[in-house]
Length: 305
Image (cartoon, rainbow, N blue to C red; front, side):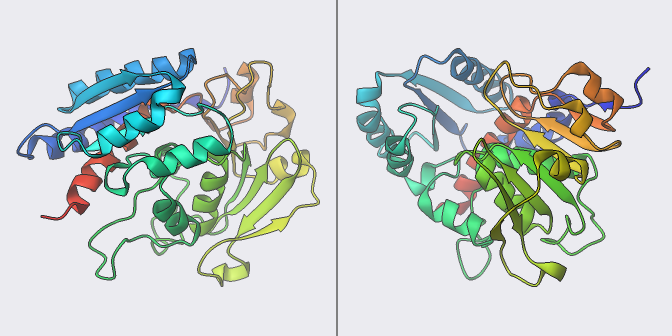
C-alpha cells in the first residue's frame, strides 16, 4: 500500500461550490455565462460540457456558442454589448499564436471571467490585488492558476499563520509549463505569495522569487543553471501541465513527501508517483470551473451599482 494519498478535484471543488451557490441565490436574477468555442479540440468541448453542468447546478445560466474561428472576434463583440450576459469565456487555443492574445483583449474587462485582460494580467504580475485605491474591487485572476492556488491552500501548503501575501514563504515549487495562459501566471502568483518557483519549459528553466526575506513587492525572474532533477528534488510541490499524452514526469525526480498536481488534460505522472508523493491531485478541472463561477460573481460585485 502506497503512503501517498490521491485527492480528487471534486472533493476540493465541493467547498467552493456550496459558497458559490449560496451567493448566486442572493442575486436578483440568475447570472449568465457564455462560452465561445471556435476550435475542434475534444478537450475544450468536454470542458464546456462540464462548465454547463456545473453552472446550471449552482444557479447560473450557461450558453455555449460554437463559431468558426474567423467569426470569433465578431462574436466576442456581440457578447460584450449584450446586457443579459454577465461573463464571457473563450476556449483557447484557437490560432495558437499572437492572434489568440489579441482575441483575449477583445473580451470586455467587466465580462472577462478568465482574467486574461491586460489590466488583470498586469495587476497579477505586479502583485496588485485590487482595481481601486479603496480596496473594494478585487482584481480578477486567471481561473486555472487561481484553481491551483486554491488547491494548495486546501492541501495545507499555504501557511495561514503568516501574513496574507507571504504564506508560501520557505516553500520551493517546480512548475513544468510556461504557457501564457497557465504556467507563467501560475509561477508569478506562487512567487508573489512568497515561494521560490522553478518555471520549466522545453527551452530552459527560470527562477521566480521575491528575493531573500521577501524584500521585493513583486517577484523577479532569473535564469536558472540547475537541472530539472535538481530543481524537482528540492521542491515541496511539483505541478505539471504538459499537453502531450506521451510525457511522463520522472518519478525518481519527486522528493519523498512532496505534493504533486497535474493540470494537463493528459496524465503527466505514472501511478508510482503515489509511492513518493504525500498528496497527489491528478486533475483540477472541477476546481477551475468553480473559480470561473467565483470570478463571475466577483465581476458582478465589481460592477457599478
